[in-house]
Amino acid sequence: MIMGIPIYQVDAFANQPFEGNPAGVCLLSEETPAAWMQSVAAEINLSETAFVLRCPDGFSLRWFTPLKEVRLCGHATLASAHILWESGALQQGEPARFFTRSGLLTADRRGDWIELDFPAKHALPCDPPEELSLALGADFRFAGRNDQTYLLEVENESILRALHPDFALLERLPVRCVIVTARASTPEFDFISRFFAPAIGILEDPVTGSAHCYLASFWSARLGLRELSAYQASPRGGVLRVRLAGERVKISGHAVTVFAGELLSLSKGRKI
Image (cartoon, rainbow, N blue to C red):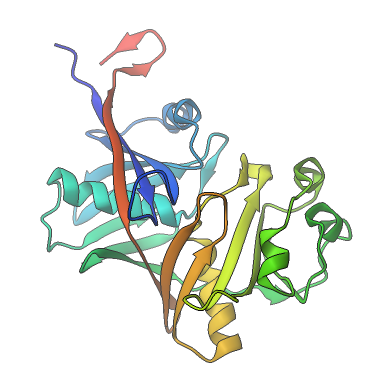
């Protein structure tokens, strides 16, 4: 019998299938080469695929887009924690501890919500590349930057929802990721956002947990609130809760398993 590697697709930041952000979650039993993980992520072809391996005192966790490994991914972390509890790899009351390229990250169950503990990040005011406004088709009330990630505030929710970026132009700019945000006019939310990253193989990400490391800090200062409700206004859409706790951000959402399967090939021409 061929024994496969368990792999799942989970809709994160969603409480029903076909909403939120789909992530692949691959449960490993041994160390595997980064090149193989990259090949799997390209094959799965979701914005991120997570690779989880049990280690002392928790789990090693790495994330890959179809093009490259990334340092931080919120929705695939939430999806990974969800699968660990659902598969029985963790008991329902146990916290998930992940050792990652961004340090120790944890996830806890809060009723039917999953709460992630992530680092708070800050975008410092900057002058964005001249063509960034042209690529997005909007003017900015605020532009901030942290490395090659840009945080941009537009005038209102209607402008944000109507954005149709020129992805070819955006990919040519010295910009890795773009977070665009606005104060929400929808009563149940404090702010909304969208996320674009063609440079790393993601035109528009459906729901981006890591972006809320910036958004929580930004909107907490703007609105004078420590706890906020957020909506990412992609075509699929997703609801998040964020809570600023010093230099950490608690990011909460739901998750739904869409399918489970097995990877049967470790590398070209070799079966497990």
